[in-house]
Length: 155
Image (cartoon, rainbow, N blue to C red; front, side, top):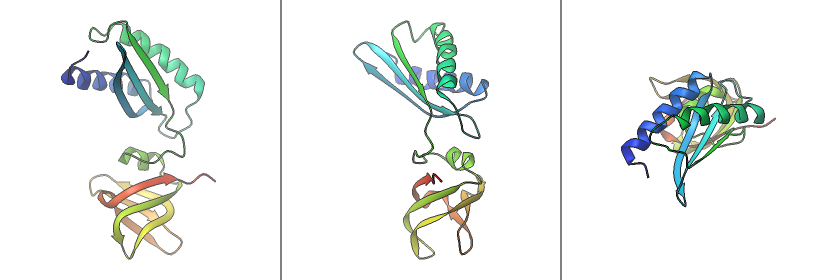
């Protein structure tokens, strides 16, 4: 079994390798099933649209890379999949990827009198931690730290 430090290093290596292929990593989960290391990865292109074939190719390339990684060994299970268009946002990268698209957003606390907003993402200001959302009434700058959940609208 990999130590916590080895898991952190493995995740960093995987992210570096996959992003070198021009793909964004949204999530990596490491766990064990029986004696096998299970590596689950959610990945997509910056603009979205990763296909099953793309995931399959990436899986083969990453397997070749992992076979050479000393800490992994031969006994592992690798799963690469798309985060899906209707997946709840879990990171600011999700907002960046959805820029220009319509979303639903639920907040932890009221912002200008409401806890739910729907609109189109106009901009993401990482430094200020703000999402510029164009609603039917106005342009709003919603702080990322009060967002409980957000999902892209499927139209």
